[in-house]
Amino acid sequence: MNTAKHSTLPWAEKYRPNLPDEMFVRNEVTKTVLRLVDAGRLPHLLFYGPPGTGKTTTIKAIAHQCYKGQSQHMVLELNASDERGIDVVRHEIQSFASSQRFHSTGCKLVILDECDNMTKDAQFALRRIIEKNTRQTRFCLVANYASKIIVALQSRCMKFRFAPFATAHVKERVAHMASSEKLSIDDAGISAIVDISNGDMRRACNLLQSCALSTNDTIKEQSVYSIAGRLQPTDVNMLLHCLLTSDLTNSIRCMGDMLEQHGVSFGTILSSLLKKLFESHMEPTQRSKLVAELADAELAASHATREKLQIRALASSFVSARG
Image 1 (cartoon, rainbow, N blue to C red):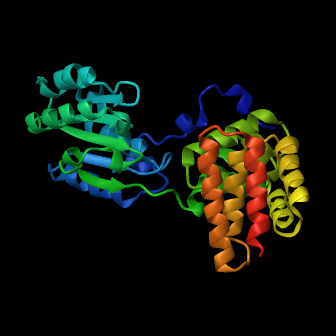
Image 2 (image 1 turned 45 degrees about the horizontal axis):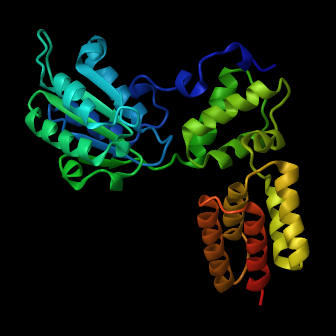
Image 3 (image 1 turned 135 degrees about the horizontal axis):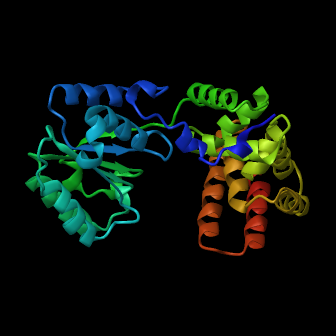
C-alpha cells in the first residue's frame, strides 16, 4: 500500500542530500570543490547545466559541510529569478559581502540560484561587487544557461557544467525512493519515469510522488505516462506508422484523435515523434527533412498559431516526405 498521502514534504526536497557524503552520485565537481576548500583556495564558482542535475544541491551540501553551524551567518542564498534587479545587488548582496563577521573564520559564501535570469544591469553591478569583496566573500553562480551570463562574470569564475544524470543513476534513485516510501511499482513503471525525466532528477522525484498520490495499487507504465501527460511508446509507434503510410486525410485524423483521446499537447506529440524518428529505420535524407519540419512546427506553435492548422501542416510534411 502506498504511503505517499501521509507525506506533506515534496520528495524532491525530502530526498535532497544535505552533505556531500549523502550524494548518491559523487561527481568530479564535488570532489574538486572540496579539495579547493581544504586547500583554502576556493575561487568564485559558476555551476551551469540543465534543470534537475544537482547544481544547487551540490553547492548547498558543500556549504553545509564547510560552515556547519555557522551557515546562517556565513551563507547568503538568493533566487535570482525572483530577486534579479539591480537594487537587490546593490543593497542586500553588497551589504552581506562587505560586512565583517566577528568570531568567524574563512570566507563567506553567496549562492545566486538561477542567476541567468538576472538583468544585464544587475550582472554588471555584481561584477564590481565580486571584485571589491574577493578577500572575504566567495560567490557561486548557478544557472541553466551559461550563455546568458555576461562574459565579465564568467571570466571571474571557475566554470563547471552539470550533465543530465545517467539512466542507471536515475533508475537506482527512483527504486530507492519507491522502497523507502513502501510503494508498489513494477519495472516498466520505473523505466517510464526514467524515460520521461530524461536525466532530470527533480522531475523524476515529482513524477514518482504524483503517481503515488494517484493510486493505492501498483504503479504501472500506463499510469505513469497518463499522469505525465505523455503518449505511451505504443501510441507513438502507431502515430508514426500512420503518418508514414496513410494518406493525408487519415494522417490528419490520426493525429487529431491522439490529441483528443489522450489529452496531450501538440508540443508533446512533436517531442515524442522527434525521439521516435531517431529510433526508426529510414533514409537519412528523409529523417533530416522530417526533423526540420518538426522544428518548424515547434517554432510556429510557440507563436500561438492555430493548432488545427499546425496539425494539417505537419501531416502534409510527412506525406510529402515519402516521395
